[in-house]
Structures are given as structure tokens and as C-alpha cells.
Length: 314
Image 1 (tube, rainbow, N blue to C red):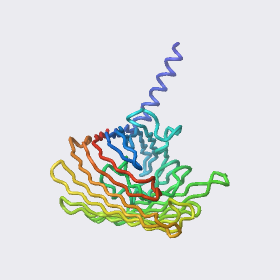
Image 2: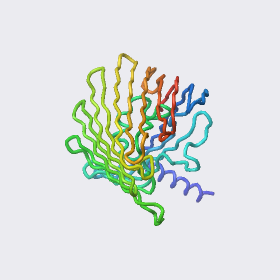
Image 3: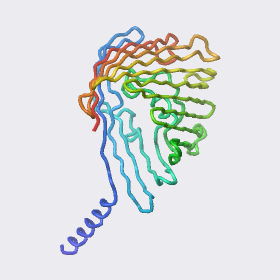
Image 4: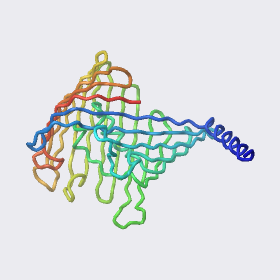
């Protein structure tokens, strides 16, 4: 018994020493809305989950500016409590990284494309590109899994990300590439992103400018076969604007996708009007009306939704 107590005390002392050098943060988001939805002429009332998640991130300072860390993120549905990515519990993110401010960061694991974050996500001001008002026209063509990535230090406001998703020795799984660059100069934010997955590829550039109470911007994307196999090339444009007064935000998003060069009548339009009211730094109420005109059903078909929701971050 005495030996057991001594061993337990040594283990506790060792654990306390490790915790003193590490920081672990628990975070998450609950986001749900009540919506009246009309999709391809079928009308329903729904409780819609919008990318709710639970996450853990940690970092260990190893001295000399070098640090190691991890991030785990699980997506779930507020309305049912089920995982949103099937059986993959950490499907949103499961990453290990090592680096420093001077040398940059090497990343290993499963994480979302930085090309997407630099362009479509960055300009999606309303509800952070989630739920029925999410950008339906952006071509996300990369793979998130089996990734090796690198994030550069900031040089004069510029950061660069590069990643490759390995094929894992499966002939049917091709290697994908993800490249991104971000530049910030005061109120001006610029981004560019490129993804290639076998023969499917996309390139996009974005800009966002903050001018007092007004924020406006958008992106232009060019993709090949992003939504249609052998569909050819397509240009997709999105413009966004936000006006802020007190705790209120007023949003307008307009997206227009042109036809694929090899498939006629595949153009589509998406418009969203939104309102956010911040109850606190972590909690907001929101309402929106979104409309997707997609007669060819390239992007899932016509959609109209009127929503009232609440989002809480912790």
C-alpha cells in the first residue's frame, strides 16, 4: 500500500508538471434556427442545425520559441444530438502541429482547406457560411483528410498556407493540393486560394474592406468540373455587404454562378437578406431570408427559407 501511494504521488507530481507547461482550451458553438423552407416546391417547417461543434485545443511551450499543439473538433446537431459527419467523431478537425513564430508551423492530420478560409469563408459575413443561408455556389474540391501542411510566419501582413492530402496507397484516391495566401493592410483584407484534386480544380480571389459602419467585399472563383463531372469551366461571383449600428447588423449577400462550358442552362443565383442582433459577445439572435434559383438542380435545386435563430459561442 505504501509503495502504491508513493507511485501515485510521483505520477500526480509528473502530471502537474506537464499541465504547468501546457494550456488546453475547451470551446464550442451551438447554432440552431426555426425555418419555413420551400425546396423544389415542397414546403416544411424545420429546426435547422448550423455547424454546431465541440472542440479542444492545446499548446505546449517547449522553449526557444518552439511549441507543439493539437486541435480536435466534433460536429453535432443541436436538434437531434447526433454527429453531423456520420461515424467520424473528429471529422471537423483532428490536427497535430509543431512550429514557432519565426519559422512557421507544420500541420499533420485532418483540417479544412485554407483556400476556402481565404476566400469564401472570409467574405461570408452572415452566419459564417452555415445552414440554409450558406454559400451554395462555391466549389470546394479538396480533401480534408490525410494532410500534411505548412503555415508561414507573417511577412509584411502576408501569410501563406500549403497542404497536400496523401493518396494513402489507394489507387482510387488521388493526391490533392491546397494553397492559400492572405494579406491584411489596415481595413483591407485580400485572399487567394487554389485547390486541385485529380483533374478537378478551382482558383479564387477575395477582397473585404471595412469603412466605419460599412463592410463590403466579395470573391471571384473559377473552377473546372467542381459540381459536374466533365462539365468544363465555370465562373462564380459573390458580393457581400454589412451595415452595423449599435448591436445590430444588416446583411446582403448576392451570388451568381455562370454556366459550365460543356453543360447548358447550369447557371444559378443566390440572394440572402439577414439581420443579427448581438445580446453579448458570445450570443446573438439572427433572422434571414435566403433564395436559391437553381432550375437545373446543379446545386440541389430551388430553395427558399425564412429563418429565426440563435447562436451561442463558448
